[in-house]
Length: 338
Image (cartoon, rainbow, N blue to C red):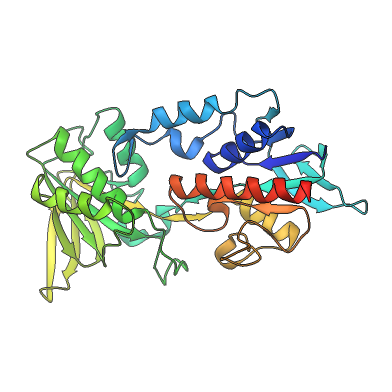
């Protein structure tokens, strides 16, 4: 039986390991962190049905309860090379080496660093937070402004670090639009009197039930939508945030003072994805992995025995990443049996 290694223990890596293990394959799952599912564990609820993220994490952890899966946590794989005997050599940050016949990479994404958008004031003004920080506020019911008070007005800004010439990321991160809608609804459920605004370029409600969620946010919760980007944010004497924008539907400049400005940060290729992509020579646009083609061979790479799945290829929802992992596991298993 050929040995299989999976790099990355997020939703994609765990799902692929589970599928292969249930088919009788021995799998070693490498994860650089001390725990799995890091990018999901810090969420509150998931779109479009508001499932608790903690429930998803628990369900995914149960998939690891298989004797065919060996977990190696705190193991950061930094190099991946094909040996002369067609075996893959995996090297971690401590210099330890591991060998495997087949490798599936699921190194995932990292959130865009909002500090790079200086004009929006993140890290400068206390009332400017990221969508990840808002998730934590919602999860622990601690939605407060920089003064520790319940906000009266909250503005969400779309496409921070995505579809943006200045940041160099021209692609759409796919989940930011619906995440803002979800968070605005969660905010209004907890604070019915708060004013919630979403600034957007255009709303991409691409998934099942997403358009319905958008309509619900307006009709049931009174969330207000402004088509236009925020050009600048600055602090006020009372700890609030003043924003300058343009309402492009009205063709008018706009100023607003808000208690919280929530930056909906997009996805970027993780450090591990960029590192291994360069090491193997399969780095594609924006640091994501390049598969053979996006249609019929999206889980294969140009290198024999090396497969990829999940958000190491491009931004995906959890549902997309899990389904992509299942496809990759099937393709890998079939290649062993052929």
